[in-house]
Structures are given as C-alpha cells and as structure tokens.
Length: 65
Image 1 (tube, rainbow, N blue to C red):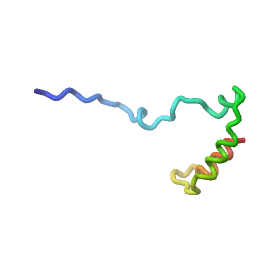
Image 2: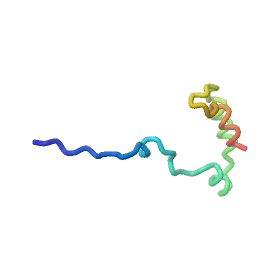
Image 3: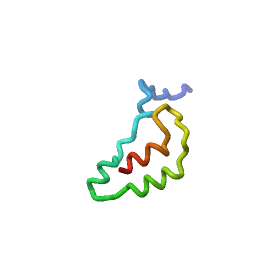
C-alpha cells in the first residue's frame, strides 16, 4: 500500500507569518487600556536582542504608550 501524499507547502508563511489578531491600536479603539499589562510583561522580559530588532523589555513599553 502506498503512503498518502504529504501536503506540499510552497512557502513558509504558514509557520512564520504574524498572526491576524487584535493590534494594540485596535484594542485601544474599543477603550481597553493595555499599557499596564504591557509594562508588567516588560518587567518579566529579558534584555537580550536576539533578532537585531531590540529586546522585548525595550519594545513592550514603547508599545504601551
């Protein structure tokens, strides 16, 4: 018996794209203040700049503004 063919992905988008979810701007538009949550998450985050775009500890407070 032959094995069923595996799906062939032509791109890695399915594994590396940004999720299509709520954005900080969208959440603010409906009146939710996410600043305190992002600042608290920043306190728990590391200083390491893994991908050359800054650390999460630096990124999250900027997003909280």
